[in-house]
Image 1 (cartoon, rainbow, N blue to C red):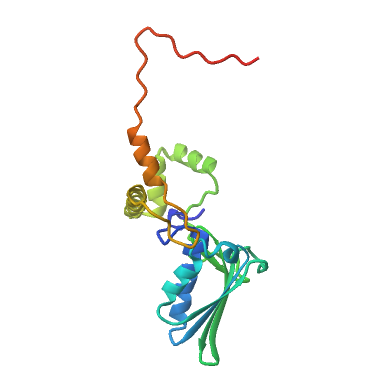
Image 2 (image 1 turned 90 degrees about the vertical axis):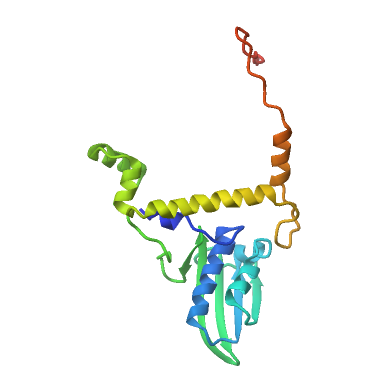
Length: 220
């Protein structure tokens, strides 16, 4: 079973598969092709159909830096191994320096074409399901968090604390920020409005001592 580090990832939203995954692929491709003066990016299937709304092109462009980026969109065409397919090309003049084909398979993870391995995944647990884990914990007399530390190392606590801190900061920012969400859909931010409305609502009064609970209607 994979490490918790494989499940919790920090990166650009709004979508782990449409934003974080393509960003990771573009960053690795840039490292391997530093001499390119033009990048071509082909997006297929779901990445192409909803990529503009999920800022796929924006995050790829920002990741590849100041070099020109040409996007090709194929929403009606899927690559053979996954709906979220993409191809990256690095050019220097008329010379093709390098290519990469792969998939954004969810959770911010990517996989190269023809390779079943998910890049960045790390298997650290010897058990495959919760039943086996609890059985092991009961046998050894340890708690679940001790089981995690046993296989992840004590530094997993700092990692999870960072994840929690980023989660809370993101929630606070969402509750405080008004206006329109980033992207081309022009959707209004609603969390702040709902939060303010909830704060103006009165809490229900507690029942008086000895009073009967509210009757439920009879269904016949």
